[in-house]
Amino acid sequence: MIALAEQSTAVPGRQWHQVTGEVALSALAARASGLSAVEALRRMEQHGPNTLPELPRQHWSVRLLRQLHNTLIYVLLLSAGVSSLLGDVADTLVILAVVVANAAIGFVQEGKAEKAIDAIRGLLALEAEVLRDGHRVRLPAREVVPGDVVLLEAGDKVPADLRLLEARNLKAQESILTGEAVAVEKATDVVAGEALLAERADMAYSGTLVISGQGRGVVVATGAATEMGRINGMLSRIETLTTPLVAQMDRLGRRLSAAIVLTAMLLLGFGYFVRGMDFAELFMAVVGLAVAAIPEGLPAVLTISLAIGVQAMARQNAIVRRLPAIETLSSVSVICTDKTGTLTLNEMTVASVIQHGAVLSLEGAGYSPVGEVRDAGGELLERERTCWSSPEQESSATTRRCSSRIVSGR
Image (cartoon, rainbow, N blue to C red; front, top):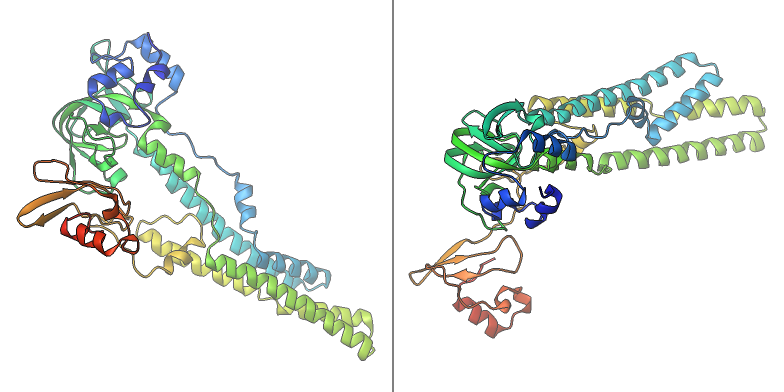
């Protein structure tokens, strides 16, 4: 038996859609009748269970302390300490209550968002019907391994990424991956290597739902190696960016602290050296003024306002992981989407052109200056790089020559 790790190199990367089902079976050292129980067990030990790995979690104490990581909060804590030293119990309790409320709201919201993100693990199928030793066997989806032949029918949730071997009126709902609300018709014909995920009709992806028909396919990826697993992994690599509001609040906290300290020093120096006041009494008065100058209500008002925005978004089924992110969303005035509501790259590409009665098809994607022009019969027409360059780089002669031939029109 040839090891799976050695055979899988026959198919580059994740390009299973550009090879035939027979090639996929050969590359996976599998058979159309399914794996043996012994081989399935060996592959389970090699690749692990067909489950999405849990995202790295921060301890609750770390999440709680992160709510306090703010310059203004530091200033409030410092003022609470000074107030307690001055014996002002009421002010100390009020300031601490503000800090605790601020941290609690952010902590609870992040906890809810973490649970919602974990729900992506529930999108995987619970059971799968596979061929083992030539017999149909129903087993937990977590036991599916690369090389298994999975049987699909209407109502099934695809347990892993499959290269389809058979498809009879097979349609799948892939909106969780592509955003397309219309079910996709599946086939077994090879698809071009550069085809987008939504165009790979010979593939069935983990977590998608079979709407109608029947089919079978060989498992090419499980767990974290699936497209759903790739999305799950992307969530763990989200960069923490500073929103404009957080940056402004941080600057305000630093400038306010510097202004309060500078003012307090000037008052202390003026009162002691110019007016000759008692240093002890003057110091206590200056400290009291400094504490009073701190806007302890600002963090609470800010956090409550953001929390109200998060709740409004939650009612619309939108997950906000960090409270400050709601401020960035609120600054967006227009969101451009396609008919299915999917966010796009805003890259429109001309697909075909009618010129003097002739229909020309254009290839290429987005703003990339690379493509081909073919006639109705699929024959490649003359292709010149100068016709794809920017107008600033073209000579007038080149422009006239390109305009006489229809090219991309970008």
